[in-house]
Length: 288
Ligand SMILES: [Zn+2]
Image 1 (cartoon, helix red, strand yellow):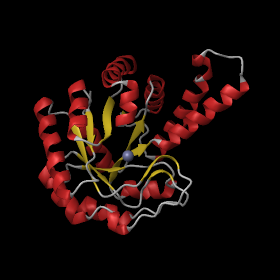
Image 2 (tube, helix red, strand yellow):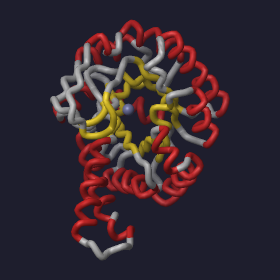
Image 3 (cartoon, protein in one colour):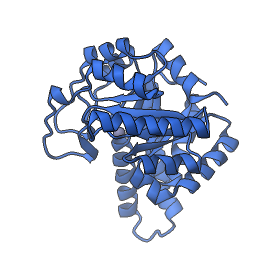
Image 4 (tube, helix red, strand yellow):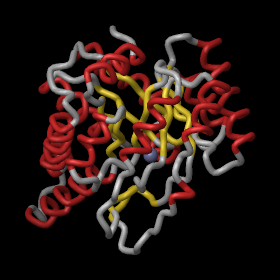
């Protein structure tokens, strides 16, 4: 199976982006893998600390192995937004392929030291594991936001800091803040494409750039971000919204039905359609 690292290198060189899709149920994992196989894209599945507490880290790893076996495509598990070194290590110990250590709320020094610790721990365990660090203050949460969130350019990732952070931590991927916020915001996001290009130009070519909070960003901005050097885009809220809406409609339409596998089948299908549309937007189709 091709390594995540070389897939990200291909994406950067050929100006497309891999998709990263969050899940909390085995059914969601199936939606991601089925969608990826249907369009010919690698599958990157993310679970935040809350999502992995719900599904279970060992269960997620066992399901990943089963999906690899059944679908014969690369399937990677990412421990998304691990807020502590301990949480990152626990996911590594369970067999995750990728870790996102997010200490961006801490000082630059603490962030650098903790991220470096996770990189060293991961390399010792399995040199193929990919580690993502984060710099900049990423606001919001993965839902439809009804309040206005203002982001100051002071919260954006600074190119010089990014360069130092990458060279000191030796991370494989860097998540940046360039006008993106988690969730679907009230106001249309306005990504700073020049800032992406600047960061891309100044950090090591071996480190991929990641854009979190891809839901709710207009298509033309996503495309420009990819051309500027983004190689991995996170989608969560769009999937949650589509899944929940389809499930609510089905529950309302069939009040006597109690077989959950019948009630949630349309929800899985709705999720798959969004994933396929995002992979098409990212240029990720037929990239295996
Ligand atoms: Zn995120």
